[in-house]
Amino acid sequence: MASEIDKGAAQCGPGSVLVLVATRKGAWLYHGDATRQHWRVEGPHFLGHIINHLVLDPRDGRTLLAAAKTGHLGPTVFRSTDLGRSWQEAARPPAFAPAPEGQGGRSVDHTFWLTPGHADQPGVWYAGTSPQGLFRSEDGGVSWAPFSPINDDPQYRKWMGTVQDGTPDGPKLHSIIVDPRDAEHLYFAMSGGGVHESGDGGRSFAPLLSGIEVVEGFDGSDPTFHDPHCVRLCPTNPDRLYQQNHCGIYRLDRPSDTWQRIGRAMPVEVGDIGFPMVVHPRDANAVWVFPMDGTSVWPRTSPGGKPAVYGTRDGGDSWQRLDAGLPAEQAWWTVKRQAMTADSADPVGLYFGTTSGELWMSGDEGRQWTCIAAHLPEIYAVEVAMGVEGAP
Image (cartoon, rainbow, N blue to C red; front, side, top):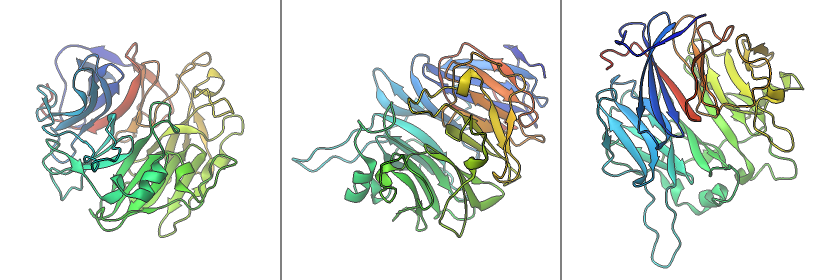
């Protein structure tokens, strides 16, 4: 499938696609027409700033939030209510409560993850930070406050470890999920610290770790040693969750609280270690992952320098390699946990961004891939929205 990049007039309306790309040095918007073959690029926004996540509010189709880290402002959140024509910094970005006198406190290094609240709660957003913290805004991202007791709970603080532990660029709270049926039912994940669930709107959370393996030699009963990379809930079956973990690919079917390792069906030479995970918007059995080399030295690159997406159509019982159009060899990049997503078209379009600054897409659910942008900074996150009207 051929794709074209155009800097001319936008082609927006029903069926159009907006791809939001967050990078190490700014953010870009790619506007696609209904065929997903012609693209108009807009950007950069925030050139030189680290943008960890860029998300469009699906409840109004116009509000954008950007999780940013800037040299002069430090960690902050920017907000646009006109699809990026103008931006305002949050009046009160996510920040931990001051520590009692004489006690050491924590400071937010960066906001990592943004999730819009429930459809019945316009203006509500959730944010996960590094080091691990959970925050909420009730005014559309203008002001943020610590959310739930976990930020300062001694047990959770123990599970969070220290800033020197685990993830190379800092521990993170991510994969914040709101059950579409119930605004009080929430999930989040911590790297490290495991997956956690609340049924009371965040007043309390409990670990959801049964069945998840940990690195050999560590205690699997201790959430400290659990490192979920990405957790996704199925839109058409909110009782099913999938997880890409530091130690495999898993599926959870509620009301069970035990995860099943479905990555065992992946080819042995590829393994089931990776960062991102994408769920089909209409088929709870269809999932895509992007494996990386998880051998003992953890190169975190495509296995053998031969990148591929792997997809399942049977809930993880079997997996298919989907690499047509991707480099056949000598491509030593990977895809970060927020940098792969799907649109809701039929067939579904898949998108991913690489650590080498390439944006790839497939308009046929992974059967054929096309590079629609190259030479961007390292891509941290990719999100997509459909049918956005009035884009600039």
